Picture (cartoon, rainbow, N blue to C red):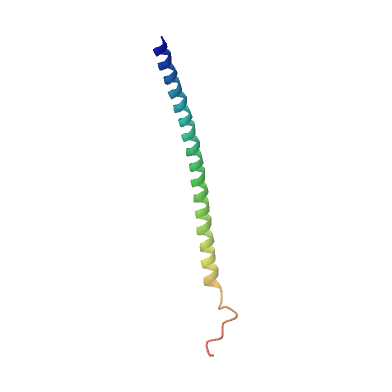
Length: 71
């Protein structure tokens, strides 16, 4: 009986550990998924801002502090 109780205690402890690990993995997966969504959104925002900057630079005239070409 003592050996059987010890074995049952060990099996129960392993089941508790596995349940904890499953919960931890699920929490980490949710965190990583949320972070990738943020990275994706920021990457899109950066691309849009870069495109706007390129358009602004291409449509802007010469800088005011540059000398005219005949100098």
